[in-house]
Length: 292
Image 1 (cartoon, rainbow, N blue to C red):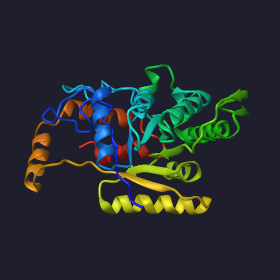
Image 2 (cartoon, one colour):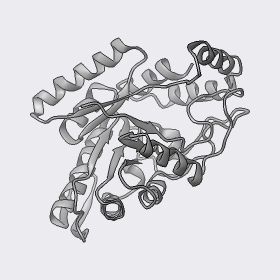
Image 3 (cartoon, one colour):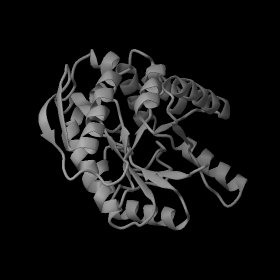
Image 4 (cartoon, rainbow, N blue to C red):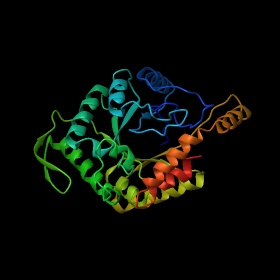
C-alpha cells in the first residue's frame, strides 16, 4: 500500500533556506488550508515537526515555529478523514502528560492522531531552555525514548503505570479515559540504533535519502531490523518537491532558489549540526544530505 502525506510548514518559509523562495510566517490558518486541501485531494496524512530554535540569517529561517501538538489538536477539529501526526521530543514533556495529550486528540479526531518521536540529539535546542540532560544523552537517547514510548503504551492500554527506572519515576500514575483507538508511533532515526528503535517500538519510519538508492538502502536496513523483532513497520520516505507547470518551469524555480540561498542560515545550520553531532554520526549525515 502506498500512502502520500504532507510535511506541514510549521516553521517559516518551509524547507528552502533561500531569500528568493516563497517567504511566509507559519499560522494555524495557513496549515489548516493546506491540511484541508490535502484531505480533499486524498492524501493520507500530514505531519508537523517539533522545532525550538531556528537558523537565523536574513530569512530568520525557522526562528518562527508553531507548537506541533497544539497545531494538530486544532487541525483534528476541522478535518474529517486525514491522519494527523504531531511531534514530541521526550526530554521536553513527561510521558504521562504526552500520553494524556494523545488520548485527548485521539478523541477529538476520532482515532486519526499519531505521534512522531524526536529522540533529541540537537543540544542547542534544549540547552537554551535548560532541558539538556548532559552529553551522555547522545549515546542513550534511544534507550530513553524506548522507555518513554513503553510508558505511553502502558498508560493507553491499562490506564495506570508504575515505573521506577533510571529515567522515570511513576507511582500508580493514571491516564484515563484511555484512548479508544490505536495511536500510531513514528520514528525518524537515521542511525542503526535509530532504526532499531523504530523496529522495536514504532509503526512507521519517517526518513529518506538524497537519492533513490539511498532511500532503498535505508528501507533495507529498516526491514533487517524489523525482521529481528517480528514486527511490521511501514516507511515514509521524505522527498522535497518543487512544482511547476512544466519541467522547465520547475527547474527555473530551483535555479532561482539556489541563486538566493540564505548562506548565513545554511552556515549556522551546518555549524549547529556540527556542534551537536550525535556520537553515531546521524546528525552530521542530515547536514551532508540536506544542507545545500
